Image (cartoon, rainbow, N blue to C red):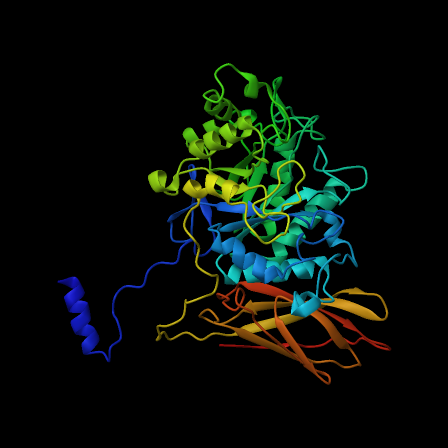
Length: 496
């Protein structure tokens, strides 16, 4: 009867369907409730994703772009049924002048990445991922590209640098809900402790400092906190031991933002005692419960297995992966009331695990991918897509803009423009214009579409940052060359 009435009503409204529009999957900013992650509408979501590494290496960019276009790779990730990317990075990408290495621009590949810094390439990857419905978790994988570190700081990369770079990244994506959170530091391990109270090695306390710093500039992000290696003499995988979190929970300044994260591997990475237990593989759920699973089963917090992988060459590894997939809870049976996960890795050039892609960076390891089929989950809607329509309302959209030169080296500079909603209703998109007072010439821009004609510059919003509620802000940046003077400019913002 309801369907008949809707059809009849449509006939009297010019054929326009009055059926209710399906809700967006994973829409808006996410938060936690007990052991689940919820979208902005309060519906549970399941992260079912994959790691794409490279920004943390000496290439300073995701691997594989030496042979394929980044959009093609992201389209393939989406087509394979993964809904989230974990993007590892090192603090090197924040250093001035850090540019990506080994990108193929032949035959039109990666054309829009030419001349960009590593951070600007990350912007493009995040933006395109958002447009095809992928979500992104940013992972501070290494303090520099030389390798991983046990602690969140080293002799060359201080805690202050770690925090400053976390805040810079959180600010950079503050108005892009496709970036759902930050993994504060990859695989803390001995001598890192949990709850020991020594601020130089207590990862739990450091995670609170880092997490609260992120939330101070972007309170919408999820904070992903990995475990350590050894707690009370019980040793496991690097980053995989969360036994201390039950007694010493991470305390954040914003409620419902904490997700605990564990890593778990098979013998292709390293051997462990539990692989040789007489009850293997039946003993594995007990191992996982002890190290991290109890946080989920006791409804303490969501648990995300941020890395797990194997070459699948040994029978032990095959049994391990089958058991772990079952433990993570098949989606058909449990829906989003399950463990979150991102598999390691998309890349085939992970020496001790291999990847979902084969060495040609194109074909798929279908055997490995098939193991994950039962825990893949709902695809997410593109960010900023399909939200229009409707009308009415007495409010008006408006915006203001401010311009700040961040770095000036005499022959060039970078500047940040902050756009803030100033009306009584949200903007749908915005445009910022200004006129240079010298011979400034823009060479790069990010988080906006920027054009220049003579001295006149026009910047328009992109898909993820056009909507600004009253009082909320977004930023975009430009890089330019000049000679002589570099006078300040006065930007003007118009909104729709």
